[in-house]
Length: 339
Image 1: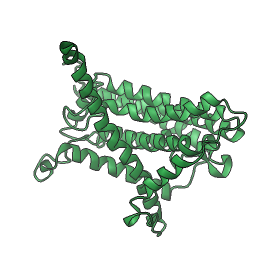
Image 2: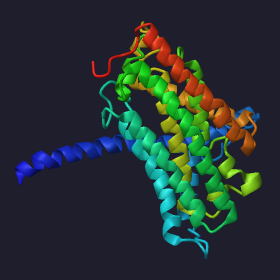
Image 3: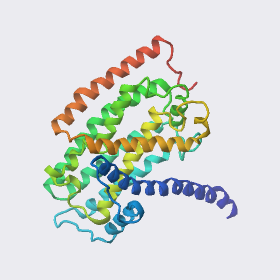
Image 4: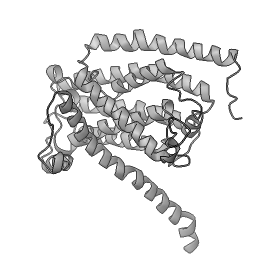
């Protein structure tokens, strides 16, 4: 029995502890991101934002969570009960499991797999299922239209995101996220691949259905879209999943283009700041831009959304892949995979 515990028990305890060390701070970050999002929006409109519950409104996320927790879960009479309830769970779970391959520092990663990029791309692709299921199972025209819009939108922008990832991978020669960060010691990829950095970030806005691409939830047209029939904790799981995906895609943007945990300059005093703190500061900046865009850019029409994805981003990202390949081969910069 002691040998079994040594072989299986302690490793399992360590893995569970590592998961909790990621998930618990992440849930706290998601809670306060909802407050920060509202505060940024308020500042842009010269308002105060939430400032009543607790000092400076710092307890507002807990008040909102308690309110949703104590509300009744209402399921429409004609809804498919099982699919209706499992959809928000899928959305929330996918936002959490993507963090398994995100490196916070050198060696600080839960699963340091060699196909980390493919894993994240697969997880993000599955996110559309929760939204489609919620739209169909709600037995509501508004919810169904929101689900269809979300499916088309997410699939459209994942294509251009895929080509952006190919450009980065050609420069590195590895699918491992830690290798991608270490390849940026000399220069962050946001500089030589600046157009791809912009396309990736705008596509991330569309992937998370954030303004100006919040067409699946358009309140003026679809009365909140696929979320219209949800209440209490089912609605809360959708919100947690949305904000969790925002943090995940911001972390991925930082990892791919902004050097991950690396400082902007390899000199003091920048090198005095710990790597994980640099990573967090960069993610916080990207999240601030999410709120900034929400407060300043008007919502796109749906035809404009599709045109941007298929007629602008897709040709540009494909052309950049070809240009990157030509430059790498012509100047002998192409990395040898596995070397």
